[in-house]
Image 1: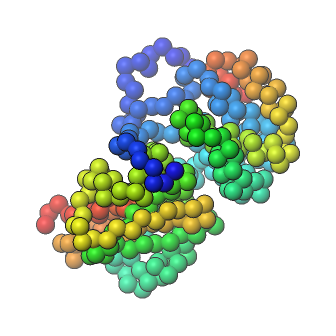
Image 2 (image 1 turned 45 degrees about the vertical axis):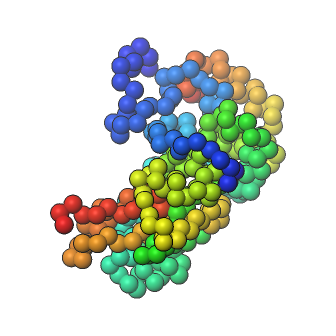
Image 3 (image 1 turned 60 degrees about the horizontal axis):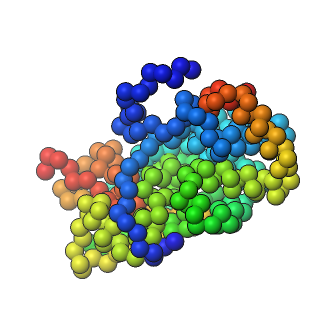
Amino acid sequence: MGGHSAGPIPMESHDFALWEKRVDALMVLCGAKGLFTVDGLRRALEDMGEDAFEKYSYYDRWIAATNQNLVEAGVYSLEELGQRMEEIAKRGPTYGEAQE
Amino acid sequence: MPHDHHDHDHLSPSGHPYRQDNDAPLTYFQRMEIAVRELLIEKGHLTPAEIATQIDAMDARSPANGAAVVARAWTDPEFKARLMDNAGDATREMGFDIGPLHLVAVENTADTHNMIVCTLCSCYPRNLLGLPPDWYKTRAYRSRAVREPRAVLREFGVELPQTTQIRVHDSTADMRYIVLPARPEGTDGMDAAALARLVTRDSMIGTGLALVPENT
Protein backbone atom coordinates (compact mmCIF):
# COMPACT_ATOMS: atom_id res chain seq x y z
CA MET A 1 0.00 0.00 0.00
CA GLY A 2 2.84 2.39 0.85
CA GLY A 3 3.86 4.66 -2.00
CA HIS A 4 0.62 4.70 -3.98
CA SER A 5 -0.93 8.05 -4.63
CA ALA A 6 -4.07 8.90 -2.71
CA GLY A 7 -6.24 11.86 -1.82
CA PRO A 8 -6.23 14.05 1.27
CA ILE A 9 -6.05 12.30 4.61
CA PRO A 10 -9.50 12.05 6.18
CA MET A 11 -9.25 13.56 9.64
CA GLU A 12 -12.61 12.38 10.97
CA SER A 13 -12.52 10.27 14.07
CA HIS A 14 -15.06 8.19 15.94
CA ASP A 15 -15.51 6.66 19.34
CA PHE A 16 -15.11 2.92 19.21
CA ALA A 17 -18.34 1.00 19.52
CA LEU A 18 -18.59 -1.85 22.00
CA TRP A 19 -18.50 -4.48 19.27
CA GLU A 20 -15.30 -2.94 17.89
CA LYS A 21 -13.66 -3.01 21.31
CA ARG A 22 -14.71 -6.62 21.64
CA VAL A 23 -13.16 -7.53 18.30
CA ASP A 24 -9.94 -5.86 19.42
CA ALA A 25 -10.02 -7.72 22.74
CA LEU A 26 -10.72 -11.09 21.08
CA MET A 27 -7.85 -10.58 18.68
CA VAL A 28 -5.40 -9.65 21.45
CA LEU A 29 -6.51 -12.44 23.81
CA CYS A 30 -6.50 -15.16 21.14
CA GLY A 31 -3.00 -14.06 20.18
CA ALA A 32 -1.87 -14.09 23.81
CA LYS A 33 -3.26 -17.61 24.24
CA GLY A 34 -1.44 -18.87 21.20
CA LEU A 35 -4.56 -19.66 19.15
CA PHE A 36 -3.04 -17.80 16.22
CA THR A 37 -0.27 -15.36 15.41
CA VAL A 38 -0.22 -11.83 14.08
CA ASP A 39 1.24 -13.28 10.88
CA GLY A 40 -1.81 -15.49 10.55
CA LEU A 41 -4.07 -12.48 10.92
CA ARG A 42 -2.08 -10.57 8.31
CA ARG A 43 -2.31 -13.42 5.84
CA ALA A 44 -6.07 -13.62 6.26
CA LEU A 45 -6.35 -9.84 5.79
CA GLU A 46 -4.18 -9.86 2.67
CA ASP A 47 -6.16 -12.79 1.23
CA MET A 48 -9.32 -10.68 1.30
CA GLY A 49 -8.08 -8.70 -1.66
CA GLU A 50 -7.87 -4.99 -2.19
CA ASP A 51 -11.55 -4.28 -2.54
CA ALA A 52 -12.21 -5.58 0.99
CA PHE A 53 -10.41 -2.43 2.14
CA GLU A 54 -12.98 -0.32 0.31
CA LYS A 55 -16.09 -2.32 1.17
CA TYR A 56 -15.57 -3.23 4.80
CA SER A 57 -14.64 -1.31 7.91
CA TYR A 58 -11.46 -1.88 9.86
CA TYR A 59 -13.05 -4.09 12.52
CA ASP A 60 -15.20 -5.87 9.94
CA ARG A 61 -11.93 -7.08 8.43
CA TRP A 62 -10.39 -7.88 11.79
CA ILE A 63 -13.24 -10.12 12.96
CA ALA A 64 -13.26 -11.86 9.59
CA ALA A 65 -9.50 -12.49 9.86
CA THR A 66 -9.81 -13.62 13.48
CA ASN A 67 -12.58 -16.02 12.51
CA GLN A 68 -10.61 -17.39 9.57
CA ASN A 69 -7.66 -18.18 11.83
CA LEU A 70 -9.82 -19.80 14.53
CA VAL A 71 -11.52 -22.05 11.97
CA GLU A 72 -8.14 -23.02 10.54
CA ALA A 73 -6.84 -23.75 14.05
CA GLY A 74 -9.81 -26.08 14.61
CA VAL A 75 -11.22 -24.06 17.52
CA TYR A 76 -14.68 -24.45 15.94
CA SER A 77 -15.99 -25.40 12.52
CA LEU A 78 -17.50 -23.23 9.81
CA GLU A 79 -20.78 -25.08 10.37
CA GLU A 80 -20.78 -24.14 14.05
CA LEU A 81 -20.13 -20.55 13.13
CA GLY A 82 -22.86 -20.47 10.50
CA GLN A 83 -25.44 -22.03 12.81
CA ARG A 84 -24.59 -19.62 15.59
CA MET A 85 -24.81 -16.59 13.30
CA GLU A 86 -28.27 -17.73 12.16
CA GLU A 87 -29.41 -18.14 15.76
CA ILE A 88 -28.11 -14.69 16.59
CA ALA A 89 -30.05 -13.15 13.69
CA LYS A 90 -33.25 -14.54 15.21
CA ARG A 91 -32.61 -13.01 18.63
CA GLY A 92 -33.35 -9.44 17.58
CA PRO A 93 -32.70 -6.73 15.02
CA THR A 94 -30.00 -4.77 16.89
CA TYR A 95 -26.61 -5.56 18.38
CA GLY A 96 -27.92 -4.97 21.88
CA GLU A 97 -30.89 -7.30 21.43
CA ALA A 98 -28.80 -10.00 19.78
CA GLN A 99 -26.76 -10.64 22.93
CA GLU A 100 -27.61 -13.74 24.85
CA MET B 1 -33.48 -0.22 24.49
CA PRO B 2 -35.72 2.41 22.90
CA HIS B 3 -34.49 3.55 19.52
CA ASP B 4 -36.69 6.47 18.69
CA HIS B 5 -35.15 9.44 20.37
CA HIS B 6 -31.48 9.61 19.50
CA ASP B 7 -31.99 11.39 16.26
CA HIS B 8 -31.10 14.94 17.18
CA ASP B 9 -27.52 14.77 18.30
CA HIS B 10 -25.01 12.45 16.70
CA LEU B 11 -21.96 13.71 18.57
CA SER B 12 -20.55 11.94 21.58
CA PRO B 13 -19.28 13.76 24.68
CA SER B 14 -15.83 13.77 23.09
CA GLY B 15 -17.21 15.51 20.02
CA HIS B 16 -17.01 12.54 17.69
CA PRO B 17 -19.91 11.12 15.74
CA TYR B 18 -21.30 7.98 17.30
CA ARG B 19 -20.72 4.93 15.22
CA GLN B 20 -23.36 2.23 14.91
CA ASP B 21 -23.60 0.34 18.13
CA ASN B 22 -26.44 -1.17 20.07
CA ASP B 23 -29.19 0.84 18.47
CA ALA B 24 -28.58 0.35 14.75
CA PRO B 25 -29.51 -2.68 12.63
CA LEU B 26 -27.30 -5.66 13.39
CA THR B 27 -24.62 -6.07 10.74
CA TYR B 28 -23.19 -9.30 9.36
CA PHE B 29 -19.82 -8.72 11.02
CA GLN B 30 -21.41 -7.82 14.36
CA ARG B 31 -23.19 -11.17 14.22
CA MET B 32 -19.85 -12.77 13.48
CA GLU B 33 -18.27 -11.06 16.50
CA ILE B 34 -21.04 -12.30 18.79
CA ALA B 35 -20.75 -15.82 17.37
CA VAL B 36 -16.95 -15.96 17.62
CA ARG B 37 -17.03 -14.61 21.18
CA GLU B 38 -19.71 -17.08 22.30
CA LEU B 39 -17.95 -20.03 20.71
CA LEU B 40 -14.60 -19.09 22.28
CA ILE B 41 -16.28 -18.86 25.70
CA GLU B 42 -18.25 -22.10 25.31
CA LYS B 43 -15.17 -24.00 24.26
CA GLY B 44 -13.26 -22.76 27.28
CA HIS B 45 -10.68 -20.60 25.54
CA LEU B 46 -11.85 -17.29 27.02
CA THR B 47 -14.04 -16.05 29.83
CA PRO B 48 -16.34 -13.02 29.72
CA ALA B 49 -14.24 -11.51 32.54
CA GLU B 50 -11.06 -11.80 30.50
CA ILE B 51 -12.69 -9.99 27.61
CA ALA B 52 -14.05 -7.22 29.85
CA THR B 53 -10.65 -6.84 31.55
CA GLN B 54 -8.87 -6.58 28.21
CA ILE B 55 -11.32 -3.89 27.01
CA ASP B 56 -10.79 -1.93 30.24
CA ALA B 57 -7.02 -2.23 29.94
CA MET B 58 -7.10 -0.95 26.37
CA ASP B 59 -9.46 1.89 27.27
CA ALA B 60 -7.12 2.94 30.07
CA ARG B 61 -4.21 3.43 27.68
CA SER B 62 -3.93 6.90 26.25
CA PRO B 63 -1.46 9.37 24.81
CA ALA B 64 -1.03 10.69 28.37
CA ASN B 65 1.13 7.62 29.04
CA GLY B 66 3.43 8.50 26.18
CA ALA B 67 3.46 12.15 27.22
CA ALA B 68 4.73 11.17 30.67
CA VAL B 69 7.51 9.15 29.04
CA VAL B 70 8.50 12.04 26.76
CA ALA B 71 8.46 14.59 29.58
CA ARG B 72 10.67 12.36 31.69
CA ALA B 73 13.10 11.97 28.79
CA TRP B 74 13.24 15.77 28.47
CA THR B 75 14.08 16.20 32.14
CA ASP B 76 16.14 13.13 32.99
CA PRO B 77 19.15 12.54 30.71
CA GLU B 78 19.86 9.11 32.13
CA PHE B 79 16.31 8.00 31.51
CA LYS B 80 16.51 9.41 28.00
CA ALA B 81 19.63 7.35 27.34
CA ARG B 82 17.79 4.22 28.49
CA LEU B 83 14.77 5.15 26.37
CA MET B 84 16.86 5.54 23.24
CA ASP B 85 18.65 2.29 24.01
CA ASN B 86 15.51 0.22 24.66
CA ALA B 87 12.20 2.07 24.73
CA GLY B 88 10.30 -1.03 25.79
CA ASP B 89 12.32 -1.53 28.95
CA ALA B 90 12.40 2.19 29.74
CA THR B 91 8.60 2.52 29.55
CA ARG B 92 8.12 -0.67 31.56
CA GLU B 93 10.40 0.87 34.17
CA MET B 94 7.84 3.71 34.48
CA GLY B 95 5.17 1.11 35.19
CA PHE B 96 3.48 0.97 31.79
CA ASP B 97 2.38 -2.47 30.71
CA ILE B 98 3.36 -2.44 27.08
CA GLY B 99 3.30 -6.19 26.66
CA PRO B 100 5.80 -8.10 24.56
CA LEU B 101 6.09 -5.58 21.74
CA HIS B 102 9.45 -4.18 20.76
CA LEU B 103 9.33 -0.41 21.08
CA VAL B 104 11.85 1.89 19.44
CA ALA B 105 12.10 5.61 20.24
CA VAL B 106 13.27 7.94 17.47
CA GLU B 107 14.36 11.43 18.43
CA ASN B 108 13.51 14.66 16.66
CA THR B 109 16.43 17.07 16.59
CA ALA B 110 17.21 20.44 15.05
CA ASP B 111 17.86 18.83 11.67
CA THR B 112 15.88 15.58 11.72
CA HIS B 113 12.15 15.00 11.97
CA ASN B 114 10.73 11.51 12.40
CA MET B 115 7.26 10.26 11.63
CA ILE B 116 5.70 6.82 11.92
CA VAL B 117 3.33 4.91 9.71
CA CYS B 118 2.26 1.33 9.16
CA THR B 119 2.00 0.92 5.42
CA LEU B 120 0.75 -2.63 5.84
CA CYS B 121 -2.14 -1.87 8.15
CA SER B 122 -2.29 -0.29 11.57
CA CYS B 123 0.69 -1.26 13.73
CA TYR B 124 1.06 1.44 16.34
CA PRO B 125 2.50 1.73 19.87
CA ARG B 126 -1.02 0.86 21.06
CA ASN B 127 0.06 -0.64 24.36
CA LEU B 128 1.49 2.71 25.36
CA LEU B 129 -0.70 5.27 23.56
CA GLY B 130 -3.98 3.38 23.18
CA LEU B 131 -5.66 2.60 19.88
CA PRO B 132 -4.50 4.57 16.85
CA PRO B 133 -6.51 7.49 15.48
CA ASP B 134 -8.71 6.61 12.52
CA TRP B 135 -6.61 8.59 10.05
CA TYR B 136 -3.54 6.50 10.93
CA LYS B 137 -5.33 3.47 9.50
CA THR B 138 -6.54 5.14 6.32
CA ARG B 139 -5.28 4.25 2.89
CA ALA B 140 -4.47 7.91 2.26
CA TYR B 141 -2.11 8.27 5.22
CA ARG B 142 -0.47 4.88 4.75
CA SER B 143 0.09 5.43 1.04
CA ARG B 144 1.29 8.99 1.15
CA ALA B 145 3.36 9.13 4.35
CA VAL B 146 6.18 7.26 2.66
CA ARG B 147 5.83 9.01 -0.68
CA GLU B 148 5.34 12.66 0.17
CA PRO B 149 5.79 13.13 3.91
CA ARG B 150 6.19 16.89 3.61
CA ALA B 151 2.82 17.25 1.91
CA VAL B 152 1.26 15.00 4.56
CA LEU B 153 2.81 17.07 7.33
CA ARG B 154 1.40 20.24 5.77
CA GLU B 155 -2.09 18.71 5.99
CA PHE B 156 -1.44 18.35 9.70
CA GLY B 157 -0.33 21.97 9.87
CA VAL B 158 3.37 21.20 10.19
CA GLU B 159 5.70 23.09 7.85
CA LEU B 160 9.35 22.13 8.23
CA PRO B 161 12.35 23.86 6.69
CA GLN B 162 13.62 22.21 3.52
CA THR B 163 16.89 21.63 5.36
CA THR B 164 15.18 19.36 7.89
CA GLN B 165 15.63 15.73 7.01
CA ILE B 166 12.45 13.69 7.36
CA ARG B 167 12.71 10.05 8.33
CA VAL B 168 9.61 7.91 7.96
CA HIS B 169 9.53 4.71 10.00
CA ASP B 170 7.35 1.87 8.79
CA SER B 171 6.08 -0.13 11.76
CA THR B 172 5.64 -3.87 11.81
CA ALA B 173 3.77 -6.27 14.03
CA ASP B 174 6.89 -6.81 16.14
CA MET B 175 8.51 -3.39 15.87
CA ARG B 176 6.64 -0.26 16.96
CA TYR B 177 8.05 3.22 16.94
CA ILE B 178 7.38 6.26 19.06
CA VAL B 179 8.68 9.71 18.22
CA LEU B 180 10.49 11.63 20.94
CA PRO B 181 9.50 15.16 19.92
CA ALA B 182 11.92 18.05 20.34
CA ARG B 183 11.47 19.95 23.59
CA PRO B 184 9.94 23.34 22.74
CA GLU B 185 11.79 26.56 23.36
CA GLY B 186 10.83 28.56 26.41
CA THR B 187 10.29 25.54 28.66
CA ASP B 188 13.48 25.71 30.69
CA GLY B 189 11.93 26.07 34.13
CA MET B 190 9.07 23.62 33.63
CA ASP B 191 8.78 20.37 35.54
CA ALA B 192 7.89 17.02 33.98
CA ALA B 193 4.18 17.27 34.80
CA ALA B 194 3.87 20.67 33.10
CA LEU B 195 5.96 19.51 30.15
CA ALA B 196 3.79 16.42 29.66
CA ARG B 197 0.84 18.70 28.91
CA LEU B 198 2.73 19.98 25.86
CA VAL B 199 3.13 16.50 24.40
CA THR B 200 0.31 15.68 22.01
CA ARG B 201 -0.55 12.32 20.51
CA ASP B 202 0.39 13.58 17.05
CA SER B 203 3.77 14.81 18.29
CA MET B 204 4.57 11.22 19.24
CA ILE B 205 3.46 9.97 15.79
CA GLY B 206 5.47 12.72 14.15
CA THR B 207 2.51 14.37 12.43
CA GLY B 208 2.68 17.17 14.98
CA LEU B 209 5.15 19.04 17.14
CA ALA B 210 5.10 19.46 20.88
CA LEU B 211 3.07 22.51 21.89
CA VAL B 212 4.77 25.77 22.72
CA PRO B 213 3.78 27.03 26.20
CA GLU B 214 1.23 29.82 25.96
CA ASN B 215 2.69 32.28 28.44
CA THR B 216 6.13 32.78 27.02
